[in-house]
Length: 117
Image (cartoon, rainbow, N blue to C red; front, side, top):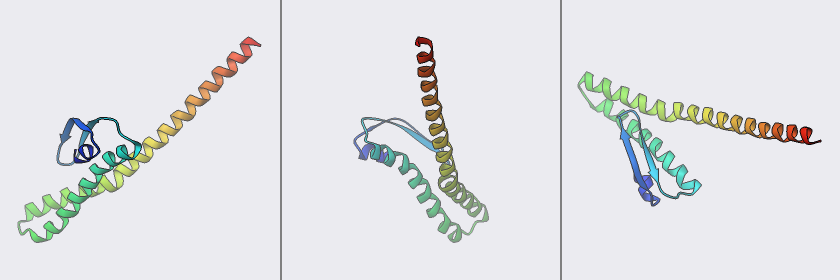
């Protein structure tokens, strides 16, 4: 949310559910501003995970310790590993779909040339 406001946008929708969340920004953004808005969510998740780790050592109650540890692990694993895999997967799909779309255009153009010849 703060990253969106920082680059002059507004937040249309916001959801935060402890382990995950999202925003829908509105405004005209450059590619770098979109990148910053997308990255800022992961930065917050990583910070929350890193803040929770030292608290695990300081807390005496075993139940709270376990909750904080689980929270930290989920935040860090999701932000550092799963988001990277998800980005890679979507990038591959997007690249593949663009390649298929350009092949379809070539086929249509080739078929059109064959018919008109």
